[in-house]
Amino acid sequence: MKKLLIRKDRDVLVAALILTVATGLAFAPDAFLPMLARAFLLEWVLVFVIILAWAIWRRQAWTGAASAMACLMVLLQLDAPVAPSVWQRTDASLRVAQMNLLQPNRRHAEVVRLALESDADVISFQEVSEAWAEVLEQELGQTYPFHRIVPGVHCYGIALFSRLPVERLNVLVLEDTPVIEAVVSSSKGPVRVFSVHASSPGSWSDHRRRNAQLKQLSTIVKSDAMPTVVVGDLNTVGWDKAMWRLCVNSGLRIGTSSTSPTFPSLFGLALIPIDHLLVSPGAAVVASRTFFIPGSDHRGLIVDVAT
Image 1: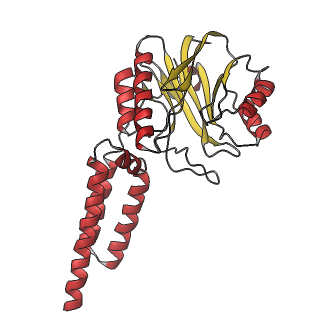
Image 2: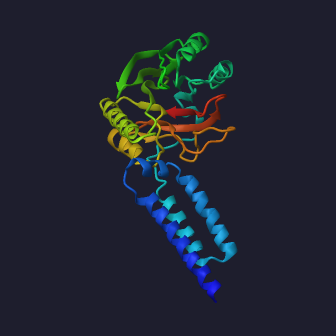
Image 3: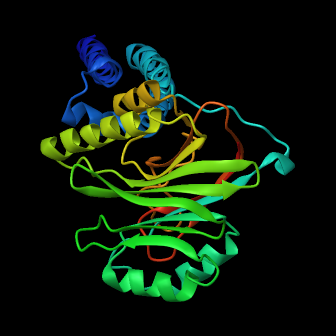
């Protein structure tokens, strides 16, 4: 009898712990540490499913019920402002590729080959060092004659390459970080494209800086009604409050899947989706996929957009 009571008490205690964690994930304020935990909601669901399976096997009723409730609570948070999709490939007017290179990456030839094989009209690069800038200029400049490169030594160098004519090509600065704006002449008319690398929220100050950058970006996007594409490493997941604020304030919607993670890329697999392509109202995504980038800690994106 004593062992049975101890087992039941342990079952209740574990259930309470699970519900506490799930409640924190679901309802925590928009602060630094909760934001980091909420970035891994899909992985938390997997943990709760494993615990649920173990509880059923061990006949732990309280733990099983709490795990099932935790799964539901977390799944309800996986809501993101998603763009409409169309499925006729002929509707695509612009193909965009996104590639975070990883600044110390030396697998230049393989990465350039993949960039060319993507058949993208526009390619957005992040973590462009002086060495990468030289390689990209030399190897892609002929195929993509319209480009702007802003190399950096702090992992926030950036570049945008277009094989389509460009009406405007500017470098903006958001909280000391460069962003490239281009007006590209697509088959359906001009499209404004932003290549962005938001700050990695590895500390409280970086978290605030990333949020400020996305807020400034939303203001710039909203200032012009031209069809717009924002692509890059935004260092936020689709269900994060920062992403919701960006989309609500700018009208943008996410064109890439929240179930297609891009970082950290290990052996071709990744955990969380922080590389995104967003589109303005009236635009839609025809197709989207991720791909392996040799030597990088990110997976790349290829997205066909209809404007």
